[in-house]
Length: 152
Ligand code: DQA
Image (cartoon, rainbow, N blue to C red; front, side):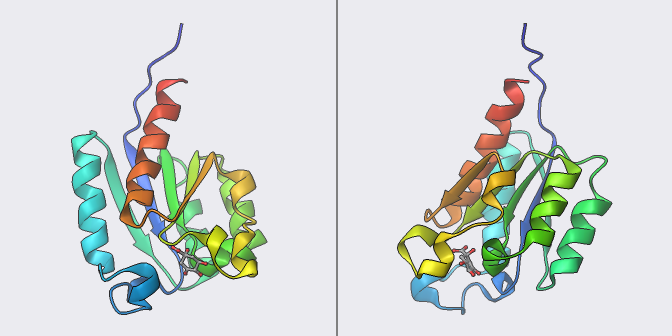
């Protein structure tokens, strides 16, 4: 019989340069600011009875510390690692090391851009990668975590 465990606390982590959303290459990432994006994620999560905890940093080690510091109580992670996606083995190891179900998300479609963006070193330690759906990538990321936990 499945346990029907419910997911309660999700870390939503934004990596380097995502603090500039709204003005950063709007033709690629849209005009929504990070605060507006977080508001939409929060509203969506509330409807699903999930509490979201937001964090953004431009620094690899600070992102890793945040994951470590919250590892004992977080039920899931939705992370947009920004450019760290493509080369950060340290971030990958942090995600693997804490063992929290993690979804990798991207606003743009990383598979339809420069070749270096097609590679994610993070994806193998995530339960799913969602790319190219704008803010919906994050919302679907929450759904994936909910669906995964329901099957535990
Ligand atoms: C991004 C894609 C990355 O390649 C890029 O470095 C980013 C944003 C996205 O959300 O589309 O910073 O993760």
